[in-house]
Length: 490
Image (cartoon, rainbow, N blue to C red; front, side, top):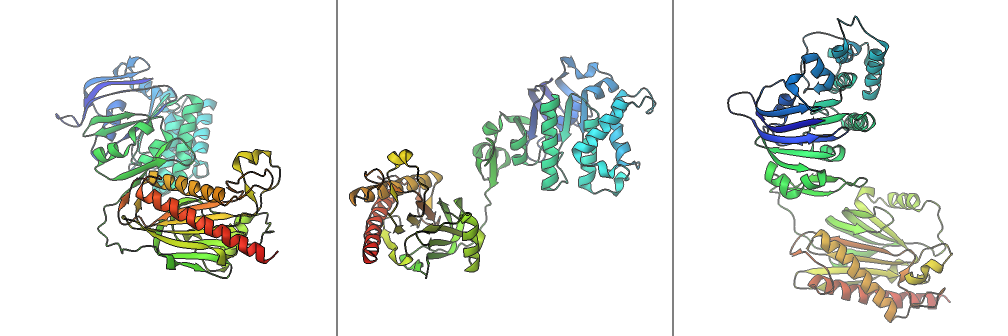
């Protein structure tokens, strides 16, 4: 639909944009990214004809852009510039209606039902219908921005050029506006080329990204191939970390600041694990990077308070998360700073040990209620409803783990737990075979992210060896403690 070939141009003799080439198909959204002064807005102005090109071609629907008259060009291309001051006062509806000028034979003398429908639809899509009789200068910057997007949509051109469309908008209106633009592209086949300042928004809403540096193409492709840590660092000279979006196969970027703050050194010790009346507790002086399968705040995050709550074996609550949240709140634990899991084992039966290695140390804590042990290879034969067991395992590491090491630590700890169950001949009562765990086991790996860097945690690494030994030893001891407790009460 739009093809740019070796385009160069700018404001003076020295081109700001140099030898830029790309094409955008019908219904595609292309995002233009780059640092301040990289030529993003200039490129858009050259494509739209606001600035002259020095060399190269801009082809629209197979024809050079210069072959179109001004009105014909406006029927093909709608342009949203950056928000600007206005010399004349118009109502919101009149401002949006200006988008229909390419279709008028006079000053609105040929206003049609189709024109009215286009204006109403554009105002509705951008959420400005309620302001239609309000003078535009009385609106906030964000509201004005939505009005001008509505004006561009009312133009109903097959190509839409946008220069930072989310500028001045709060996050809710950013989402609403970009959802609208994305849906218009899909439903009506509109080709969209948009300048973005926000890399994460561009990655979420664009099919492809064009990354500019000093007026030249530094990278172009799908977001996964452009929003790379090395590429962003090269172009922006900024340290970032990329990770997948939680709901979409799109990359998202986190800025890593270069702060010179003095960080207090600390480590987790065995003495930090305390036995309370009905739970095991560890409270760290600083947040620990944590991955877990806990009931409260499962997944990856940074936390300071860790709770392993003991409940009765017949504990049956419809909404476990809500009940557990109320429990934590009643004890005064900060909900966003706490990881909590549950076990049928009384807190005094927790087994805790500290293990020293060349890199530093780890602390392991295990409760092992094996009354409902399960052989995972036979669990498909079961029809019973799972209930509280549970083997809960905490591993606290005084070191700096890579993401790979966190995952490997989970694997190593699980293998050590299974080996302990095998050696202790813990059986699945349904199948009679050796169990691999219980139906509600939880596992937690937490790291201080200080000290020696630990890239791996497999069983042949120093860290993996400590995790394997620690989890195995503490699980065996916890099973013995649980069996003694059961024996005392039977």
